[in-house]
Length: 179
Image (spheres, rainbow, N blue to C red):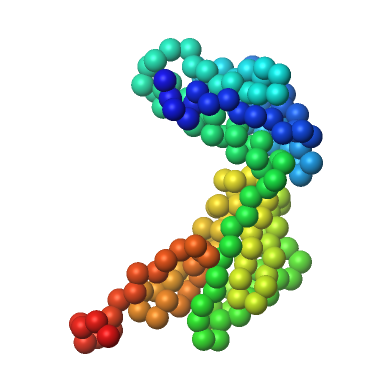
């Protein structure tokens, strides 16, 4: 049995879950999320818990068991607490500003980089830090990855956009020796 899949999901107060044949809908104080049910996986609500089970032990269905449970858990967490990712911008002359639903950045290019935030994701800019937040873990992670991809951190001076908890492995310069 899947170690992740067999764990029950606790439903916090203020969160309602609707389980249909094809869809799972989770409503909470921050919004609503839906997810389709994978074939061979059954999701059932028992009291204040959600149980995810599988119909048999085929490898393809076993692989989806833990995934389905994690998706439902992330939906419950998202509508009750939400998710956020922090990005740090390092570099001389780099600037970032939030204008409505767009992030405008000067990243050392000859032009200003403009990133349009998708619906359901918000951003807060403080100094040289961007905090991306929303209710969908997948969408928050995707937006953070797209912003980071605009100027990845380079290994020599560490200039670029990096996650707040990311560690950049630094290289020594031309001499080939550690300084």
